Amino acid sequence: MSISTTFRKLLVPFTCALTSAFPLFSFAELRALENEEMQDIRGQAGLTIDIETKYTIAEFEYVDAGSIFMRDLAFEGIDGGLVDNIRATVDISGPNERLAMGFSDYALWAAMGFLDPTEEDVEWALSEYADASTGTIGKEVGDGDLLIHVGATDYGLIDFTATSPVRDSAEYAENLDKMKNAIDFKMVQGEFGIRSSDGDVETVLTSNLSIEAYLGYVDILIKNNGNGFSQTDEVGEPDGIRLGDSHIYIDTKFRVEDLDVDSTNNVQNPAVPQQAKNPYLTIRDMRIHNERGADTLGYFGFASVEKKIAAAKDIIPQYDSLIQDASAGTLTSIQDIGSDGISIYDINIRWDWDLPHIQFGDTNQTIGEVYFTDFVIGTSLTISAH
Image (cartoon, rainbow, N blue to C red; front, side, top):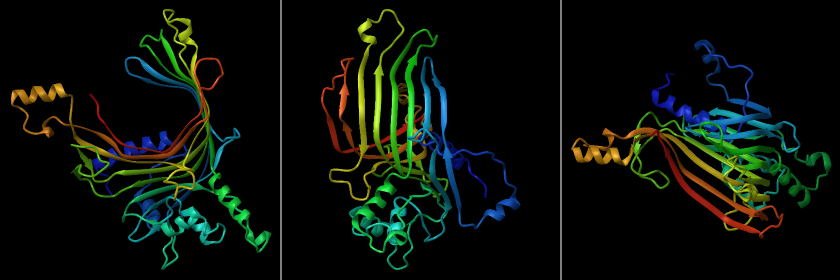
C-alpha cells in the first residue's frame, strides 16, 4: 500500500502528539520490513505491546529569538519506579468489527462478574460497549481505521472464585477502585522559564512542579477517509478553512490526585526590585477529576480531554498581505494566498477542579479554597507559519 503525501502530513502531527502528550513507548530497535514480511503480518489479529518506562531530561529548550526552557524533567511512577502496568493494543479495523476502546475494559470485567453490574458507571459501560445480541464487547470504528488503545496490563482484581462464592458490595467496590488506580504516574519539572537571545537575562516562571496522577485510558484513532479536503461546516471545526477528510482523534481519561507548583520570578536583571523576585504564587494539593456535578456518568471519576488533528489548507495569512492583494486587484480567491498548516480542533475538555491551597507571597498563608464543578472547554487551534 502506497502512502500518499497527505497521509505523510498526517503522520507528522500524529507522531508529535503520541510522543509529547504521553511518553509511553520506547523501542529497542526499528527496522524496515520487506514486502514478503509485510505479507506475513497482514491479516493478523493485531499487536499487543506491554510497556514499562521512565525518563529524565536535564533541559529542553525552544529557541525563537529568545527561548523557552524547561529543566529537570522526569516521568516515573508515583513511587519513583517505572511507569508500568501499561498495555497498548494496535488494530486496523475490519467491517463491523468491535475493538477494545474507551472504558470497554470495565464492561469486559463486569460481564465476567468482577464488577457490580448495577453500579451506575458500570451499568453505563455495559450498555455502551456490550452488544446485547452477540455478547461482543468493544466499539465499532470505520473499515480500515487504525486504533491504538492504551489501558492496564493487569488490574489486580479480586478473584471471587478463590475467595468466597459471595460477591458482596465491599469486594465489588474494591475491584472498581483497583481498576481506577491501576496505572499511576508522576511528572516532575524543576523549572520553566524564558531567557533573552544573548542568555544574559533569564526569568523562571514556575518551579518545583510535581503531578501525581492516574490514567484511565488513551485512545488514538486514525480515521481512514481518503486523501481529500473539505470545507469546514460542522460544530467544533474552525471556520473558513479546508480540513483533511482523514484525521487523528485522541481521547484521554486521567485523574490528577496531587499537583504542587511554585511560581517564581527570579529574573537576573538587577533593575528588578528585590520584592519582585520573591515567590508570588504557590499551589498545593490541586486535584483534577470528574467526581461531582451533572456530567459524571460514564467517566468513572476521570477528567476527559478529547481532540482531533488534521491537515489544513487555505488558512488566512497575515491581514496586511490580504489587504494589499485585495486593493491591487490580484486576489481572486483566498486559495491564492491561503497557507497550509495543521488544525487541532473539536477540543473537548471536561473536569472538576479543586484548589484547596492558593498562596501569594512567602507568608505560607492560603487565601482560601476554590472549586470548579463541570468545568468545560470547547475550542480549536489552527497553526501555520508566519
